[in-house]
Amino acid sequence: MTKVCTTALVILMAGPAQSDDRRSGFEFMGPTTQSMQTDDMANPGMLAVLAGERLWNEPAGLSEQSCQTCHGDPEGEMRGVAARYPAFDEVAGTAVDISGRVNLCRTRHQRADPLPHENADLLALVTLIGLQSRGLPIQPDPDPRLTEWRARGEAYYETRVGQLNLSCAQCHDENAGGHLGGAPIPEAHPTGYPIYRLEWQAMGSLQRRLRGCFTGVRSEPWPYGSDGYIALEAYLMQRAAGMTMETPAVRP
Amino acid sequence: MWGKVALAAAVLTASGAVAQGLPDPLTDTPGDPTRGRAVVVDRQLGLCLLCHTGPFPEVPFHGDLAPDLTGVGTRLSPAEMRLRLVDSRAVNAESIMPPYHSLDGLTRVAALWEGKTILDAQQVEDVVAFLTTLTEEPE
Image 1 (cartoon, each protein chain N blue to C red):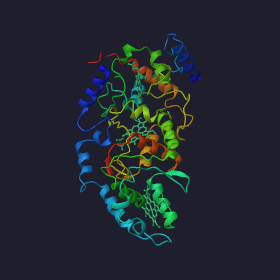
Image 2 (cartoon, helix red, strand yellow):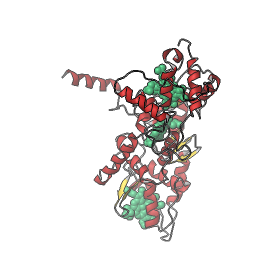
Image 3 (cartoon, protein in one colour):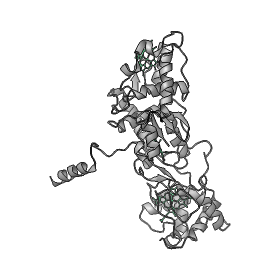
Image 4 (cartoon, helix red, strand yellow):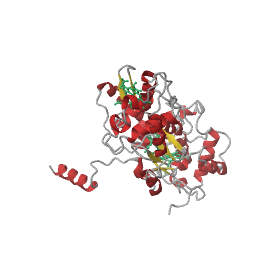
């Protein structure tokens, strides 16, 4: 009885609207970087959105159809999609993230070549789709076929790898809020992807970010597009369920 | 070979025995504290200040994930330091401090580092020799 009351009190005292204490990478940034993200005129990610809008309307491949032809304006059908991915694709028989999904539309519906990972056009389209979820809570797809992917992602998250022998959890759960050299360690919530990263001077996907963390512990990153990333993405999105999407985020 | 020694120490620890250390130097050449200091402050080589603070005013960004190295020379014996460097898991299985001179249980190491320890035996001795000189009291 007493215990329940104490817990309730702690939650009340923890802050206003927040029902838990998970924190987006946004909250670990300095005010300058924060306002670069929140001001659409200053956010370089909005340039990717503009490029994405142009591409959305451009016919591609043998079909000579554009995204617009089948999906209409991005503000319609694409609302909330990025907050729900990765999802399971029936025909491919596998889980895909938004980049993978866009490439399926290119190959399957437009009969065009897939765009390579981190290609500027692909990032632009994915950023445009991500923007349609900005401000919405992350709501992972309930499809039971994803359960196994999330479990695999969680296992990767907990496993020590590389010459430095560290797991994601050791940094992002046990030492979040601490500093690795000068860098604050965030909680690894994938709320803002694709991001504009100051260190890259460019837009990049969550997969690129994850590769950076693998390289940091001197582990061999999987090739882009590997199932391992999709599994990790699926787990990270589940772990961040209910948190607010902020694509396109800016990160140091 | 030295992995074996670290393992033996780990087994001792697990069974509750004391002597958490590697008393024998890894090499015949005595450690050089000047070279050891250079290893400690080097971001690519020692990586120590990614996690530790310490008396290194010339290094701009220290981490805050690990104990301050100030005065560690009075807290730990060379044998204890050597063991922590060779494989900190022998002291704390959950340690985030990387195993500097052990390949034990490592997985998915990048090709560039595969089969190599972070520091070689002489570098470990140099670092131990340097840490031993850190005898000033923390402020």
